[in-house]
Structure formats: C-alpha cells, structure tokens
Amino acid sequence: MNLNEFVINDIKPLVSTDKIGDLQMLFNQLTYSHIPIKSPDGLYLGCMSETDVYCFEKHEVIADQMHAIEGFFVRDNTNWLDVLEAFAQNSTNIMPILNSSNSYIGYYELNDVIGLFNETPFFAEAGGILIIEKGLVDYSFSEISQIVESNNGKLLGAFISKIENDMIQITLKVGNTGLNDIMQTFRRYSYNVISGHEEDSYLESLKDRSAYLNKYLNI
Image (cartoon, rainbow, N blue to C red; front, top):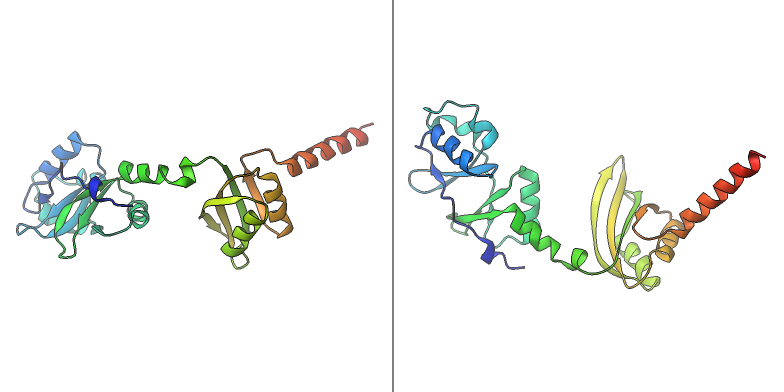
C-alpha cells in the first residue's frame, strides 16, 4: 500500500532552542502524544512526549532536556505494516518520516494507518474469525493453511496475536465456508480452539452431553 498520500505537515517540528512552554502550549492545542524536535540547522532529533513535557518548567529550553527526546521514526519507503508496528512499539499516535537523506518530510497519524488496516481483506471481506492455540515449537503456518483449505475454506489472513508460556495464539480470518469443520480438524491436529465466531457444534454437543449427565446424576 502506498502511504505517500497520508504524509502530513500540519505541525512543524519545534527547534531545540525553543522553550518548553512552547511545547506545552502546542500540546494544549493538539491531541498528539508526541511532538517532533529538530536542531537549529534542521536535523531531526526525535520526539518529546506530552507526559515528559509537563514535568519540566516553562522557561527551560528544550535542548536542556535532551535526555527526554525519543528518537523513533520511519522511512518514506517503510511498508505500512512496519509503520503500524513502529506506532505500537513507541506508544505514540504520531510517526515522523525521514527520507533516505535523513531529512524530515512530515509525519503519519495513527488513525490513518489503522484505517488502511481496516480496508484489507482481513477486515473488509465476509468471513469468520477463528483463534487457535498450540505450542510455540509445534505450530506451522503451512499446516494451518492446509487445514483451512482442506475443508474448502479460504484463508483471508492470519497473524500471531499472543505468545505466552511457550504457547502461541494465532488469529485467522476464514472465508467461503462455515467454521465448524475447520475447528474440528484443528482439534484433531492438537490445536486448542480458543474461539470461533460462528456456531461451534462440537462445543454445543459437549454442553448438551454435560447437561444430560448432570441431569442423570441428579435423579
């Protein structure tokens, strides 16, 4: 996806010789988590967060608080998934952009990049969401694809949504078919099905049997 149309220049970077009070005033007017900072000769230095800015006195110069500047950025040719990752890693809603010459050319807003994600087939196409879990060393994306496609499903997208205690959770978007047969096949391959956003007849059957057993034991 081409991100060039999403480059924004509404807010110019402040200069390191500006006052902290200038930053505080700018944050009062905006909803951004960070503001880009450049040197007097135009070199991008990094961003200062709103949280840090209000820890300093208004009369102080930005250059006196260089330790608080965070040096994150992306390139103008960085793909949109890596841009989205940079947003997440730096807990920011604004991402400065540098070209190959390290010149600052603008910034991305988080909402614009998330909007691109929402337009992908993973979200835009009709289908069901399935979350599966398996041991970190045991899962295989090729096996996952084979399971979906062997049940006449179409895999529209997949990503690792959680890793914890040597277990991995993978979120799938599946089109073209109901999820029940696919979920049962995953179970046969020793995947734990965390959730499936369609009726899961396997679980419903277990619930019915459990209800019957409880009724029998209570006679």
